[in-house]
Every structure is written in structure tokens, then in C-alpha cells.
Image: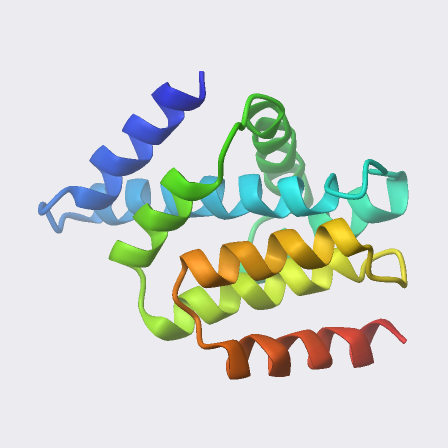
Length: 155
């Protein structure tokens, strides 16, 4: 299942056709890949309660301009994909190759916001976000600023 998702994301992002449909497909693939990483971080502490789910929904709605129903559908699909996720490496490599520095930093920012959604940072969430940010090649200084911003926003 994850292999199929990965192939879909690769094909969609790698497409050189610049038509409107291709741009929409690319954005949908990036949204799904980002949502899978967000769910993986939310589950890293082995607790994924309703408040974290709601926080993920709100962040996805705001970040991607989706309706509440579309966001819920994306979160549910990402949750199913995250269940089968063995490694984040394939997704992060793909995102690294196809996103700008600012887009990658935005993903890291979302991940920190998810990690702090319950008001505290678990060591597993911290470790996973740092691992993902390293795999996205976001500078450690920028990662620490984004972490600090998320911590302030959560308190």
C-alpha cells in the first residue's frame, strides 16, 4: 500500500507536464505526503487523542485551504497510509528533491506544531521531527527557530 502511494507521489511530482490538472495532482500528492508525515509525528508518542486529531485537521485546513470535510478525508487517508509506514526516508527524499527550501521549512513548522499540539513535546516526537528535518536538509538553526516558535505558540 505504501509502495503504491510512493509510486503515485513520485509519478505525480516528477511529471513535466505543466497543465492545470498536473499542477492539481502534484499539489494533492504533496498534501498527502505531508499529511502522512504529520500523522506519523502525532502518533510518535503512542497517543493520538481527539485534541491532536482536531489540531491536525485545523493545520491541514489552514495550510492547504481545504474545507473541513476535505481536511477530514485527507487526514483519514493519511492515517491509513501512516499505519503501513515503515520509513519516512522515501517521502522525505522525494519532498527534498521537489520542494523549495521555504516549502520544506513550512513542512517542518507544521510537524513542530503537531508535536506541541498536546502542550508538551515528547522525546519520540522531538526525535522524529529532527530526523525528518535532517532528511529534508533544513538547516539546524532554522529547525530550532521553528521549534521555538511552535513551543511559544503552544503555551
